[in-house]
Length: 449
Ligand SMILES: [Zn+2]
Image (cartoon, helix red, strand yellow):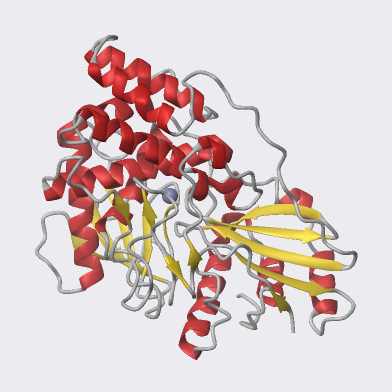
């Protein structure tokens, strides 16, 4: 059997390994579905997916627990509730985030031109993720053990929708600091969507992301906390929330596209500090400032935290005046997390754990949840070693890992052979690589069709 080690007790780590049969089956099913996603490549912005029903602002589809996208239209814009909870939840959440961008920031749809949005629910079986694939929004039903439906907390959908907005505006590269900013911007506008629906001021809001995603019995208040990154959960099955909220704690890692879901806590907390310092409703002055920075000329796709911070200071100056209290609040927010606008921090060296000769390590990182699963196989000693070796002989990892750019909330597979790591985005997986992943992570789900 492959040896299973789970790096640092992060999230989701034990699903496929759980002693409970149902949980293990769901983990395997998610893994298989991830492999099947390989043909949906992302890259430069493509027009959002259209369907026959796409006459209103958006249409919710159901994949019927298959991996077919976009699936079958289930509820068009303006139609009555259909009684399918996930469909109706997705409908309501799409209306909420659409309204935030259109009514507050004057932006219609992700591209600012009102392009209809396709949302698909009931994706896969036991699929524990949600993502924007460059063209549409996709939601799994969760595993029924730890994770509830990914449509249940409406801010998950708002987060994914905002990935679409970012794609059409700053187009932040999904790697390192710009990737963490991409994640953070999605959390910011997700929180603002929630707060606006609830009519809360910055002081009244809980600043939690993904509240309600976990089923009862899980020691978690939410998936992330913007006000106190690293405190959202601490559960035997999930480990402890690994987010950081200060530059002093910045995590250098090759997992998760450079820790985009961990380091996003830093700009998340900067926004929280700026918004609470400004007071009032956060989607107003603070939200307008971040929106102006995201859509302005100053933010480049590969911007770092300091560059983005400088853009928010400039945006607040443009909107409210250079000597305004809003500019001071923005500066205070970034100072609170150790980021000096316009002054880049020297990056530390990335950490990489060497692997003994003849060993293959596979890590799955990334995903909306930001989980890491790891498995290891000794090519000569493990029963699956020969098959893994022969499969890897068929794959040019260096080429495959260079064929696709990282995409928001997609999984990333790192295949490490004798200490040499190759990152392969979910959307670039080949059938042979999917089989390797299943073998090394210990999921005997059989070859993928
Ligand atoms: Zn995301």
